[in-house]
Image 1: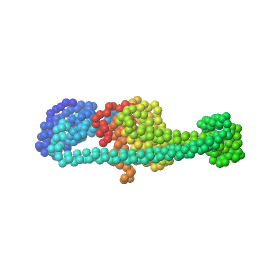
Image 2: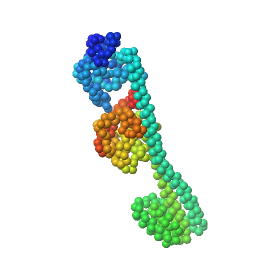
Image 3: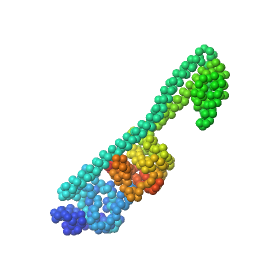
Image 4: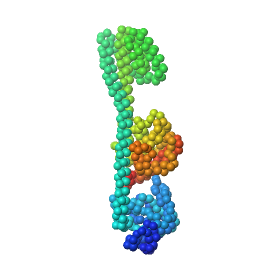
Length: 486
């Protein structure tokens, strides 16, 4: 870059930005500003650097770009004399971090009139105090509104997830309570039947054989094959006939438990040989209680395992015990999100997971990424209206990035509104059903905080939101949290 002579007041008046200023203001600009030449294909300033100057284009063509996962994407190109860029929010002062929000590049040889940011900010506050107040109010008001509504949306999402988690926990918890109550009754029954069996009319050998039969029944149940409903019904009929033939009361009630435990008529014959016909009913009921007890303990084990899994999923989802940024398994985060949203997934929606298990763990903000998955999955479910296919897919995107896709078979996003879906407060849902911040929050989490990219492709029956994330994250900068959170 090279600096040339300053511009005079009359030259400055030819620029549309300054054409209505008075002589005093133009004299001040002429004194404070300077002209700078930038050769073709050279950067004027870079996104993220301290915003030190306000630039006005005098001649040449410039390109305005935004940084997207390591690449600068051009968003505008112009040769219009008088367009401006750089420290455009310097008037706010040090209440926010002053960095360049984009990158400016000289496409051809360019000439700029530039003013130091501090001087430009002071002039704005002196010359246009009311305008500065309005601009500050709009800036901070929008940011505060965005923050409050964003927090409200997160609370609503948390409430919805909590309700779903409570519903999911209630089923296994209720099953465990029911099984525990039934187990108590069975254990009491076993004690009574054992007293009847061992009242002195069974010798020690017979009692030992009965206990061995009890152990054999438990092992038999553990290895019992899965039966179809028809096969189970036939087996129960067979055992019912056997029990009736041997004078055992309530045969139909006992048969279902015995069949579930893998017991057949041949094995019951060995019970007769051990205890005799006189003690047969008491022995069979005692063995039935044994099998029933094992079945109930299995139910309790399944219920507790289910509860433990749900708690683990909630813990994985919230990342409450983890550092803000840590090494995460992207598939574990997706599975935890699906578990938390299980109650919101209609019965008519099929969930398909196509994971590339070769993907490595990555450095990321786990809780924030779960918020992204939640927003995308909920939007997909809403779009399908109760039936369709929800697809979660992961894959590589080059050697140092991975991709997560959330797809649905809904009607798609119309081309007219697709460019606006990441805008804050834009929503297609009825008033009161959406704040329009879900995708805006997701965009800021992915792009600003994780230095990734999020995009959408949509057509009837095939809408896909694609999230690209770098495997390795750069070290967090002081302003990252604020920029990501709005």
